[in-house]
Amino acid sequence: MKNRLMGSLAGVGLLIVAGLALTHNLPGRYDVVFGDEMTYLASGLAYTFPPDPYLAQWGSLYAAWLWFLHLFTPDTLDLFYLNWRLLIILTGALLFLYLYLRKSGFSVSLFCALCFQFSTLNVLLDPRISAFTLCLMLAGLCVIQARSWSARSVLLITALTSLFCAYVRPEFYVTMLIALGLALGTFLLPKLRGNYRSASAWSGLVGVIVCIVVMRFLFGNPLAQREQGSDRSFDAFVQHFSINYNTWNNRPIDIPIIQQFELIAAVFGPEVKSMRDAFRVHPDLVLRHFWMNITNTTKAEFRVLGSLFFETPLNHLNSPYRKWILAALLAGIVFGLIDWRGTIRQLTRKGIRLTVRELAFLILLLPSLGSVVLVFPRTHYLYFHAVALVTIIAFFLGHIKLRVMQSPVWLGTLASLMMVWVIYQASQQQKEIRPTPVADNIRFIRSLELTGPVTSLEREWYRVFLYGREQKPHWIQVELYQPNTDFGRFLEEKKVNFILMTRDMQRYFAQDRGFAAFLPKAEAGGFVRLKAPEPNGYLLIRPELLANPSGVTLRSDP
Image (tube, rainbow, N blue to C red; front, side, top):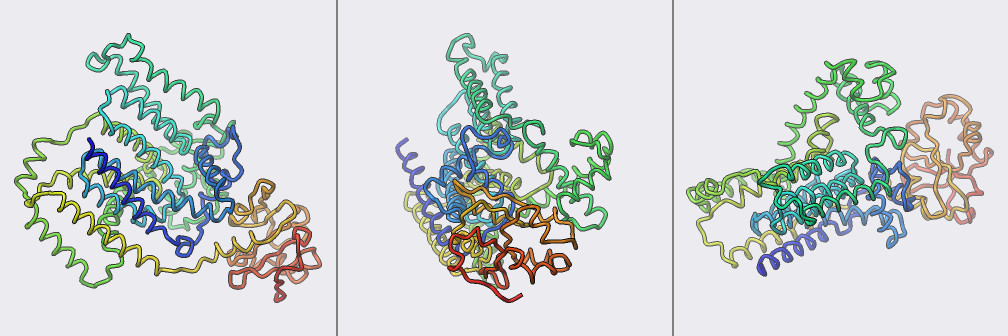
């Protein structure tokens, strides 16, 4: 027991050190990427308790996590990178602990966890809410693996884990109901019910039900429809069915959200408001959508496997002979180190058994398994599959019998070699300094001393980084402007006082006659133009919004 505890602490410590090395100077190497993560960041910055029931479908607990980090990191950009860094570190450490508690062996668990932690899939995951969900999942699975529980207790822990995950990703609420139903079913099976009349037999079940009621009361219903929240499942179906449908018809797949809903109305009819309605109208198209997702998911699983255990270990090894070097190394291991008879004997003796612990893992994977079929094989769904693939590989690697004696010296040597690999990878990545135009723009707008509420016209998410206790910027979508009309009047009507003209915004308005007519007269229209860090970028802002208009750099060129 003492050796096992020391192994757990040593492995977790090594993964934390590796994660710190991997994420050092993260802001200098990776720019801010706008997407769904910005929605969650905005929710965290504006978080109050108890939260708005609307957040039950949009990551209440993740928003609370970001709000907690914000207490220690007042700068929003620093908060963004801190959250990114912490989740990379935590996922690797918790994955190691889970694999080690599964008795995959110290070196195998360390190797697999490092491959996952350093993978592009983990480092560049977006949105990072899936990494936070994975941390909750792995924490629950570690509790299950930590000691010998009854089948009912394992299912109740699974239900509780799913409950917390449901307030991050709402599809886990169904998983929670499945696990709770199976736990109730143990009272009906003679082999599992035990002394079902005792208070202790029912205490765990009652405790989980109380938690469900309390969470529902405090945070709302994750499965709420449009009356209380947004029908997130249908929104996801609309977004991704349009991708598949346009692929079948050789049309552009990157279309605005408004056009996606228009496409669904044209294909299925305007009265269709759910996936079930769509299936009733055109079951052939919905089934084709499902089948295409299954096909693409199968291909993606192999890419993920190759990325984890081929690309990641060989990253920054740029020799043209690296494939041959790997082949020679594998041949040496396969024919020189592995005792195949002993390995087969171990696998035959222990076998592959579906215990209640494996059932718990499978139950927690159900949301991502269903999502890749019903919605689309998006990267943040495949992220959970990657953990399943790592677990399977760790199982087989952990049952390999070597010809050499696995002494502490041997294990220490392997761990040292892996740490040398970590140092090399981290040092190589520190050299990869990339331009960060978005982060530079964010630093610029945050450096301005603003004296009033911001009403921002934009296509991106810069307004999120202006959030504060006294500042909740109002977003005016560019689609609200009728092209080639009076742009200045539109700004007056919408009370716009902040327009960051990035390259994207300049491309959007490049052919618009209304904007072209307004720009030379912007100052007469009540705006000043400030130079932004992005090349050729500028900010149009009303001077009354600036606490010190004379202390900023003007941009005079048209």
